[in-house]
Length: 296
Ligand SMILES: [Zn+2]
Image (cartoon, rainbow, N blue to C red):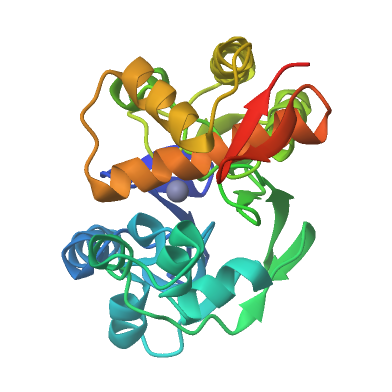
């Protein structure tokens, strides 16, 4: 069932919350699609109950739980116009790229299995940050890099921001302990930008209720990143490899990772290490076939 957020802006709650903006003529704009055809069917039912048909679909980023149902929706609703940032669209069109990038080579089967869940989809319209006019409505596209390199958020005319995975709710931070990040510097800047944004409400892709203010949540997300930076920085008082840091992250999270989980932690460890090393807070050198990071 659709939940009203403000004005003509709604969302369809689920494992991935889907943004819905109602147009006068019974058309709708969607923000994200959900993970698979089952999620797509649930969304279609919720839309039909309100007499809505999607005409526009904006995908925030190329993770399967966000774009996996896009192909199914496209088949159900002919003429559905798809939008994303050009870079994320590449990952949706060539969907093996995600596991290839995560592994850095021909990926392990377990990684393919996880990330090929999102069937490839051609997104023909590329969005850049700024104002976009779709039908009679205007939307502000907000750059939200950090969790992925080219994630975007959508701010509707009703002042509702669909923030994708740029922010993690308190519950998600508790459940997963470490935030999946590809670019720490970009994420810190994204948090700063989000704090300054004047909005009526914010809907996270994974969260129970819309937020009326995200200042506190931004601060909590930043604190979490700073905790990890400190932990990794302290760890590097003696030389550590990226695998050591991955172990540190997984032990701090207290969870037994599977193959995909390990590689997501490995990617995040890499993001923290490149952030620290590129700011000259860590040195690095190759000794005995290992790449060590350490404090001078
Ligand atoms: Zn994501």
